[in-house]
Length: 107
Image 1 (cartoon, rainbow, N blue to C red):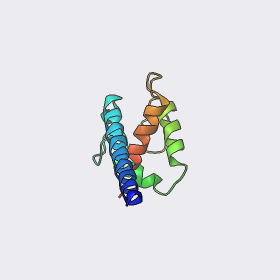
Image 2: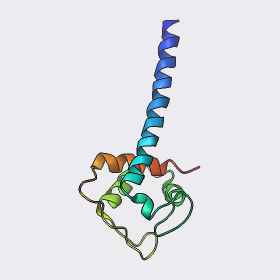
Image 3: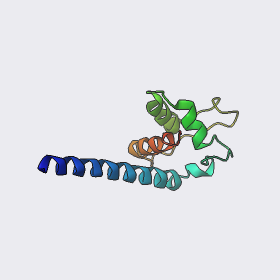
């Protein structure tokens, strides 16, 4: 009986951790002004979150690629408007959390 309780607790904690990570990703996305150019499903200056997630779905290297692109900026993938580099004040961990949240929008 104790093993079942332990397994249930571990599963509940894993779900809670995922929910917190998602909330953190969205909060960081907004705090760091990513939402100025990127929206969930309405194209503005940059691609939508759904388009980004769909493009990189199944690519195991996508998180690292996107983290580097968010940090350094770049252009040419989604059109002629380049993405500016992210300010140094934004930590690599914040970028990692934000990118994971962005990639979670693929359905």
